[in-house]
Image (cartoon, helix red, strand yellow):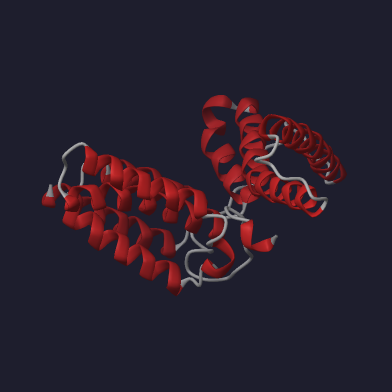
Length: 237
């Protein structure tokens, strides 16, 4: 089951792990937006650099590849669709790699950033304007980021359990999908309840402002790298 779990945070002490979540989140948003109008050649070079970065930080591709199967199929679909629209093979490949680049950046972000740190950073950033609402929003962000891998893991676990009992989904697809959805919803309610109990046990309250991770020289380096990449994207375009 572990091979299907994606978008899950791993504890680490590397450069990316110790960067501020707001800086990494800004990088994800800015670079994803700029890639939408980048040249095909730059997208290919950027994807290679991104793949190299994922190897440097030791992203567990052996464990992630099974969970990324759907996204890989979708990338192939994007490539074929662009070819059918009479676009060149280079442009079609760039469109597929653009999608995969956003996926890899998202995997790197979730792998190196805990949901708790992300929530506390967003909450602290918004607190001067929204006050109590920012703390509540931070909790929603934390719960969402925590539940994404849990949803995937639970769904695979239920599917494997049903398959071990001899259930063939294609034989009765509607009934199987309905049963899978009901089991998944029930399991998620239990997980959310357990998560809420854990927060209550830590005396969590939306009345109290939570301390956010600080900024370091690593964040300055990250900002300079983002600015440099953004400048290259705009210049090559």
